[in-house]
Length: 389
Image (cartoon, rainbow, N blue to C red; front, side):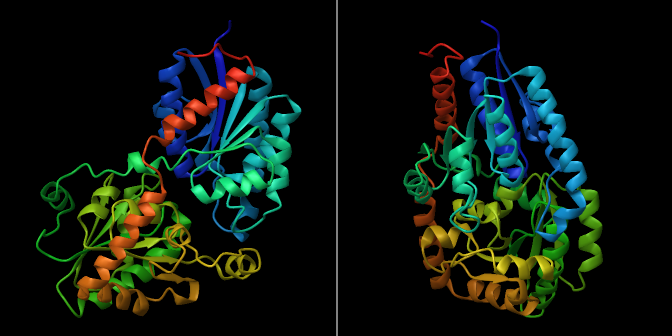
């Protein structure tokens, strides 16, 4: 029998990380397996042949998409040409629905079986995607427990595998080592600022965060740490911090230490997205912020239908963490919320208790292994490989 060939496509940084973990788990089970597709540095490190780089097709917001359409179209055609050449037995499409749902249609026409890993947010907007998913995929693997019922009602084969971040969000440094690496004083109150993983996000979110830092320095001894996301170049971010910040508090950037910053900081200010789940897993009291272009915000208001923006609040079913979004995202409001958490131990304790309940809903760990098992079962159903022991 010829070597098993799989296609795997991720766009966002989080999908690249989940894809890398899944690819490694599949290699451990299958041994000789060829995996190609789209992804980033994490997937390349585990041997995925990334025909296209996720960085070239990832865009933020509604209005920002238009300028990137030509390169996305080129990437799309490149992937399909590689599919025709390699003829994979199965494709694992990871989140990134604007791209991957179109890709799924073309893969279906080529009789490629499709596992979709990480559900699009059909519960928040564009519920019509359920019809597309039913027509184009063989199975959905979802991360959140409430998503399973949505797919069952839509008649789409689904399995809730849990969240892979449960196993991944672990600090690597002791408190002393982290503060030494960051060049900060371990005795001084520390606030972690997480402005996002893409340049466009950082340009919108970091300046008001640093303005809030300026206000906070007027009331207390305090310092700030900005973890550099793996998708960002520290040499780009560091001058931006120096340019934006006007005040007397110390602000340091640290690379490859996001989870350490969440573990050892006192409070965090976190851009809405995957980082809110990471903060919840570290049980770190935090405030959620986010800002996009005015036009994207206006258009999004008519498309998104959820009571909360952050996944943490959606899982909690209540306003557990404060959300300061768009016009509410001001330096004054951020500073006020951070001060409240720092000054009220009982509020921090209630928040941590709520975060622990959210953490429990993310599963017991082992999500990637369950996802790998599901991929193998689908391969076996299509008689692509013999059953494993």
